[in-house]
Length: 130
Image 1 (cartoon, rainbow, N blue to C red):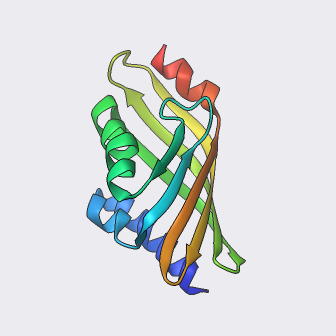
Image 2: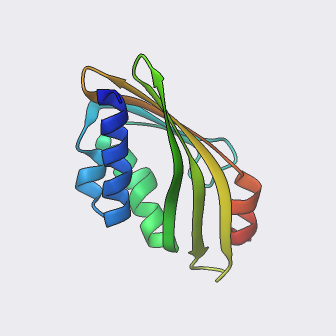
């Protein structure tokens, strides 16, 4: 497998451990993180601090047991890695749970994560929140 594959695999392993610093360890300073339109945190976040506060900290605060369970990691070559899996968790404000499919497309250049784009079932996430 490629260096990019190993970097993204390490990101998901850190996520499984609840290790936020480990999750962002290989992020480039100007990493662009895209949350899908329709997702509650939709938008583009640039830089580690923006990603932590705009995505990861909100997920931890608003969801009980939120997780991204990886099922398959695909090395696309040329620094592209695709992760396929499920999100799950319970929205604290409603007590409703969800389990939805996701696809993550990662870009790695020079040993650093430079891009991330999320594709997911936004309707299933919103249903747990309403």
